[in-house]
Image (cartoon, rainbow, N blue to C red; front, side, top):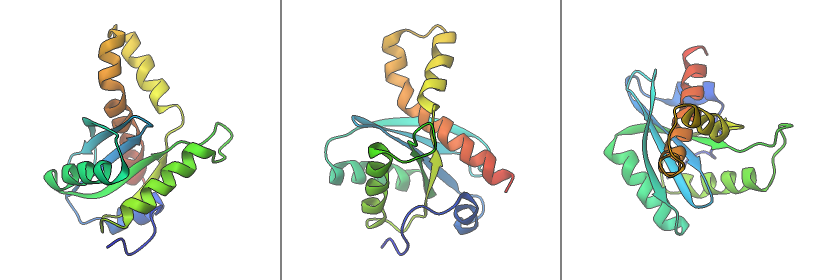
Length: 158
């Protein structure tokens, strides 16, 4: 499993995907993993679910089970870059998670810059007058959809 290291460019990622298949977006947090799914035409990202993180083995099993259920052809993982584009500890942890995950699946994995995704989603939810509790329930999977939508938009114009 995991023939190549994760981190394909979006163009390489798109080329590796079979036609008419969905892809999954991941927003890796320290406590949760937000998941989003695309339509098979890869035009629209929709929030899917949130996985409460425990340990890597359980986290990987849960998200790969979702990937199998929805028959996704690839994974887009949000990469938390610093505002200046450099990589800090969170980006390194995300890359380590992806490397370990690649050892458990043959699905291609790409990274997408997730700077400000949670902030943008939270701002939209506040503008929509969602309560703090409701925002907390939705923000991770909504951030995953925001990340995935950015990658889908790029793939559509690649």
